[in-house]
Structure formats: C-alpha cells, structure tokens
Length: 583
Image 1 (cartoon, rainbow, N blue to C red):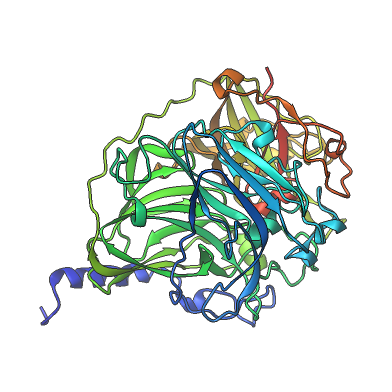
Image 2: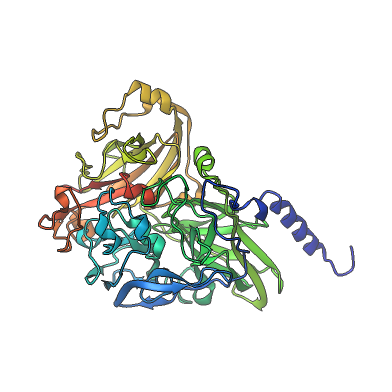
C-alpha cells in the first residue's frame, strides 16, 4: 500500500468512483442557453451555500403570510418571496404533540401576487382579481381534522383577512406539512413560498433524548425540504417552464432546473461522526426524486407520510413523488474530518415529458461534510410500533386518471379524475365505518401521486395494464361524464408489492403510468374521529371572485373533503375531486 493510504480509505475511494460513474455529471445537468424549449437558470455551482435550518416553534401562534426577501444562492441577488411567520422563504417548523390542541391563526398580508403574470384566470377558483388580491387556504397535509379545519380549497380568505385553525392532533407522531391550498392558485402560492414542516410528537417519539426509540434528536434531527426551482438572472423565481406556452396560461407542470433544499440551491451542511435523522419532504410542484448517497451507503427508513414504520428498513435508495415524506436515519461515523458524501438524485422524467421539456435529472441535492467531532450512535430498535391493518374491503372502487385534449386552450391538454372536473357530479360517497379497495387506473403519460384528505392509504400492489385495449373496449364519453370501467380484462403480468419504504399507512401514493395501483382506505366514523366528518360548515365570508360554481357562492355551506393528484399544476386544473363520508 502507498504510504499514508489505508486499505479502508482505498476501498472507500474505489466505491465512490464506481458509484459516481452512474450519476449524471454536472455537464449533463441543466438545460443550456442553446435549449430554446425552456427558460434556463443562471449557472450555479453546487455546495457553496450552507443548508439553512427553519426556526422551530411550539404552542399557539399567529403567523403572517407576507412578502419577504431571500437569497437562493451565493451568486444570486436577494429576491422577493412569500413566507409564513416572517421567514425569508417557506415557513417555520411547527412542532406539536399528539392529543394536545394547537391553535394557529394565519393573517393574509399579501399584496400583488408574486406570480401575478402567471395567474391563469380560466382555472376554477382563479380570476383577474387573483393577480392583485391572492386568496389563500392553509391545509395541514396528513392531518386528521374536521372539515372546517382542513384548509378546504374553497374555504379561502383574502388579503386583510385571517383564519384560525384548531388542530386536535388525535393521531400518532408523524412528519406532516402545511401548505397553501387556495383553489386555482395552489401551484403558484406554494411555489412562492407558502409551505412548511409540521412535526407531530407523541410519548414514543418525543423529539428529544427521552424518546423511547433512542432516535437522533435536537441538532441531529434535520428537515430536508426538496423543491426544484427556476431563476431569472436577477435571482428571482421564474415560474415559467416552456417558452412556447404564453405567460398566464396553465402549462401542465412547472419543472425547475435547479435543486433547492430548505430554500438554498444544492447546499452543504457539516455533520459529526454519528447518526442523523432527516425528515425529508418532496415539496416540488411536479418532480419526483430517486435519492441515494453517492457512495451507495445504506441507511434506515424509519417512517413515511403517516409516521413510524413497524420496523426500520435498511435500503440504499428511496423514491419520493410530490407530497410524500420519508423519515431517514443515516450514519456518518465512517467519515473522517474533512471527508464528505453527497445525497444525489437520478430520477428521469417520463419519456414524453423529457422530450417536450428537455428536463434532465438534478443530481446535486445536499453535501454532508464531516467535522470530525464525535456524534451520537445507538442501535435502532427492531420494532417501532404496531400498525393496525385495515379490515377486508367492504367494496371496490375503480377510479381513473385521465388526460384530455382541449382544443380551446394552449397547450391543448388537460387533466381529470374519472373524466370529471371539480364541480361535476357524481362525487365519491364512502360510508363511515367501511373499508374500500381503491384501484387507480392511470391512463396518462406520467406518474401521479394521489392524496386523500383526512384518511390514510395502505398500498397493496401495482400491476401493469394495456391502456389502449382498455380504452378501445370502453370508449370514453364526452368530458364531464363519469368514466371508470374495471380494468380486470386488460391486466398484464403479476401484481408488484410496494417498496419497503412504502409500508404502513400513507396519505400520498404514487400511481405510475400504464398501471393499476391498489390501496385500502378505512373511512372512520364520527365516534372514531371525535367529530362529524360530514358536517356542513360556512366558508370564509369573502368568496373567490369570478367563480361560476354554485358551491362557491358565499352564501353556500361546504361539506366534505377532497382527493387529488399532488402535482400542484394538475390539482389546479381538473385533477381534484370532492368526496363525503356519509352515514
């Protein structure tokens, strides 16, 4: 061996080199100025800015939604953003405790929309007035909440108004998140910065050194909020993706060409030689991520959307679609002072999306550099909790994810659920106390993360099917007519089980293209919940201007919840539907 090079170091260097060969290089990363399909960001070197850690707040709070200023990268100028609670971008991490009420009041102090020119007034809920008076609604994603506290997309409030949400937190510890859900503006409001983490604790997962599972806590527990973004030369956010789509027109999906984590472009952070717990959230509008370490080191997945798994899962990679979360424990004990390892991504877009947009994977996520200091290291338990499995289904429900040709708009395409738009009937009416098997038939050219408010989903399997034969045998009626034929005769191959990190209850499930995705949903009773999930409630008194739907009239009460695709651009189109839990 050469002097000064240990066998262990040589092995690590060889493994890292081999792993790097499979990852897109920086030269292959973003589009360049020669790519006329999109609006490229300035060239920004990765790992030059330190990872910011959002402030953590506890107890009842009043948070302003207001304009702020933030620098996304060392080489960009400070730019206008939106945020919650006075942050530069995004919002503070809210920490709550199971079975303890938390009251949050949000003040809409917004002025002209940060993306006023990008508002599409033809979308349900949006109007010309949305450019100067942006409406908001705050949804606690993954929370079990009464209908009036859910942040319903039609229960909005305008600048100068406020809304108080009371969360009883009657559920196990979990990594939830809060974000805007205003009808027709969700994609723009979240992109501007209206999103943040909500960590729910309980007696087992206390968030400090007293936690029963000896999980990393305090400085060793960090949120990682992933979001791809696109920037103008002046450092400001650029919402537009495709040059051929006129500004102010919905374009199917905002795709960024730079990765941000907690609001910084591909940052770095210093770590001690020990274990860290990362609460990872995919807060992107459109992009999914396939995450792994450059040296392919193993790590533990201990939880996902709805909280801790029954047992830790050892893996070398994890995939997250928009809205999904992963709770990871990573050990950096082998890194000597000054050594680093990168969390990277190689997720490619669907073939047609890549062809149209030229989108490349964004490999540079975050770099972890060792300080050499001694960290904490403790064996993880073999059991974290026992999840109650749903009972056998009382009924089967087939739903379709459909893509539509709309010649009256540019681009001439739209999204829908069951061939319906938000205001269309019928809506799903599951009965309280029953369990349903949902079969999601995806006929589009891309994957869709499906999210149901209020309830958890237990993923069973996924199975390919023949979408052409399915559609030929079941001609679709005109738009606004329900269409969800059973896929049984068109299935291909054997059902594939969920990935290990998809075990246990979730609130968001990826439904790949040309695939039938099956999950169980238990719809709880009022007694189980401690409130009536089918209660009517009066929305904020100022209805959204320009609405044509009778349900949106300011004198009409609301009822029930929504389910939708969590690609924010899709839910702002027609990929969101109402549902009620009836007795």
